[in-house]
Image (cartoon, rainbow, N blue to C red):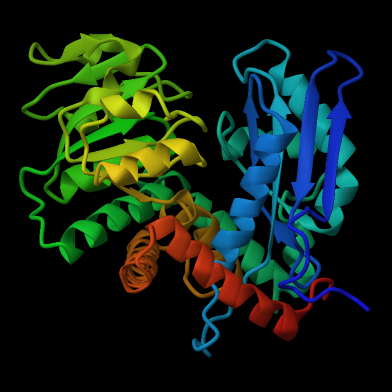
Length: 403
């Protein structure tokens, strides 16, 4: 007799490790769950990336997809997929990195063509992924979803047009995720009646997600008092010039220090942990906040723009100190959802429409999660898990695992 969805063990459907025959570097793919025969999740590249890390990220993608499923929204064209993730153990700045990426994609081609839709994640940009995918012989990194589209040609044109949209010097695809993170912050602050003006924010990581988050929060009236990149922490209690810092970034989110103003201080790398700010946004690597360094945090809110930045033992200790963690599975889900809203036709290739749709969706999810946490007497993460646990069986019954 087959196991029910609630009895099934949390092991992923597929978990594999690839070894590059040229460099010996390893890459991983984990498919946590399929819905309609397809799973969604990006590809990251970083030194030290492990199979366990990728498995955790794949589980997170399953949750993100489920959280954006609304069975009561009859007009939505996008129906969520399953969750997956890829990872390559290599420094993206290394000379051999691009060749490793191309060979990884060649090896994963059967999976990408059949059921894994992927895109940029930590260490990679979408243009690099697309270029490598073309060299690997792929039509697209999201081609597995094409059979689910009503009009494939129109959908592909719409997504290509959306990726061509630039807002104040930054591509729309690089902004929507940060828009979602920023709206998560604003929704949480609004819920407890905290004013935006004067609320201080520290952002760790100034790449795609961190940079866009800083822009949207700054434009909403919050004060960005510190940002951190691989060179260290830049701080100014009166507020940083976010636009100038964005303009001075390289492709990896590192800020040229020549752009700093006289009042901007250069501090050690981990100074971001103890920044004097109400909101802390970890937007870089996983496992950044552990059971030891959490004691340095002074913020009231931690908003996970990165995937898995707060370790469980750290989160428990932070909760004991009255620090609320808004979890990654909700906060940073906007980028993934935007891809599908656009491809399936819920929105067009328009920045204002994309931002409005993202803000509405994220504000709704944050409100639902925080209300559930309050009602259950749990953390926001536990509330998000509870919502997912209720939605997954409904999705499985309606759409099936394998289509």
